[in-house]
Amino acid sequence: MPRPSANDITQDVLPKISHGRGVYLWDASGKQYIDGSGGPAVFSVGHGDPRVNEAVAKQMEKVAYGYRYLFTTDPLEEMSEIICRATGLADMVYTTSGSEAVESAVKIALQYHFDRGEPGRVKFIARERSWHGNTLMATALSGFEDRQRAFAGALPSVGRVSAANAYRLPEGVGREGLVAHLAAELEAEIVRLGPE
Image 1 (tube, one colour):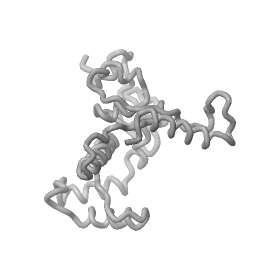
Image 2: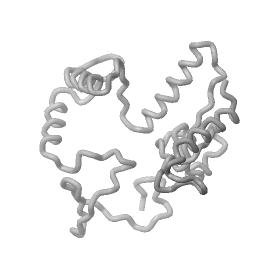
Image 3: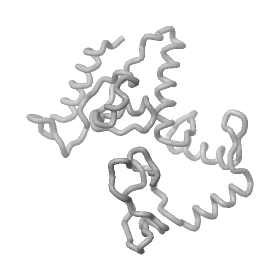
Image 4: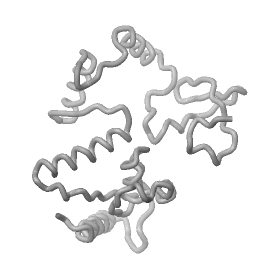
């Protein structure tokens, strides 16, 4: 039987979800689950929310998609204004996924240094056990070696620093010293890679 994802080839048969409501999912046999699976922390509106469904259907009746470099819409401008006002940002870029957002951020950083006449500034530092997405660059930034192994020859080298988890303190470091420890570790990694 075909698998819905290449990540599933080593797993047993997965539950077949028939429907969801709020935070719950039900499989084809009627078993109920609390949905903690919504991707890496991206599914926050729940399943089957009538207000969300109505708003989506209403917009789809008007226009399903407008390419951001050629068109704008009232809902897009309204949402942009709300986000910019709440965050104090003057500009923002929409993407369709976290992976695309990470990829775009990397490209913006590289373009910034290229435009400043510093095309050699191509080094990145990321945290161990961090998740940044499914594209090749996001996989390189993500701190899970087992997920990178199959792509090792294609991934750029990325510097690493410890995860910033107060519940998993580095050996010999207390809570009160965690921030100073992480800052020193980051500085050492910058020096190791070359700050230029």
